[in-house]
Amino acid sequence: MAMMGFAPSIESAAKAALITTRRVVAAAVLAAVFLLPATPVWTLDAPPSLERLPEDVAKIHQRLDELYADLPNAEPRDAEAIQQEISAILSSHGSPTLDLILQRGRAALSEGDSETAIEHFTRLIELAPDFAEAWNMRATAYYLEDRLGESVADIAQVLAREPRHFGALWGLGLILQRIGSDERALTAFRAAVALNPHLTDAGETIRRLAAKVEGFDI
Image 1: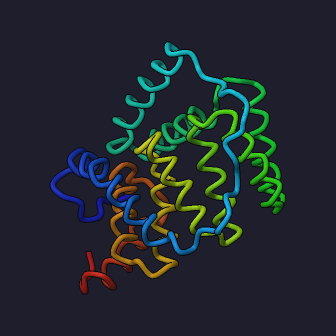
Image 2: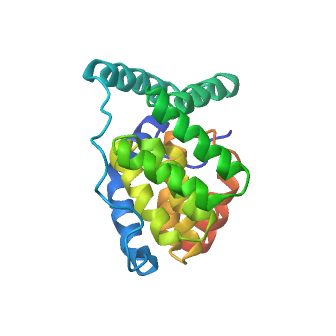
């Protein structure tokens, strides 16, 4: 994907994206808070968390650091492989039981059964609240059900655990755009693309929104 007006470099843009992510998420939660339900959708009376071993967490973080560092400047073929590895790492907790729950939730989602998927992802969050992808998948299911406030709240949880999750940032931008918060949506989209310039059709989406928000094309 061609460069899309980010300055002065992909590296500096990625750093700026990480700096602004928390501010964007906080603003998004405030923008969408009126959409949240009056009652909680899950409770905290869950069994003890299934925590990963510190050495395993360290290895995961080290590998993700390497992959995220390589992604912005990667050639298209290499970028696809890097994105697949990032997705594979984020999608694996390491516990066969928890990974099975994630698979079942995704299967339900692919079959159009969002409510069952939400039940699976909620159970996974109760068992492993540190697992960012559990929050991300429930955010996706909420989005498909038009439960946008709950989706934003879950995206905030994803980014608190993995602020470089460009998929969650892009999803945040989509929600902000739907609720009419175009300026914040543009910031989220740009943060996502700074981390991963290879996102499909991202350039056109950003150009259209920038023209609307800023009054000129990029």
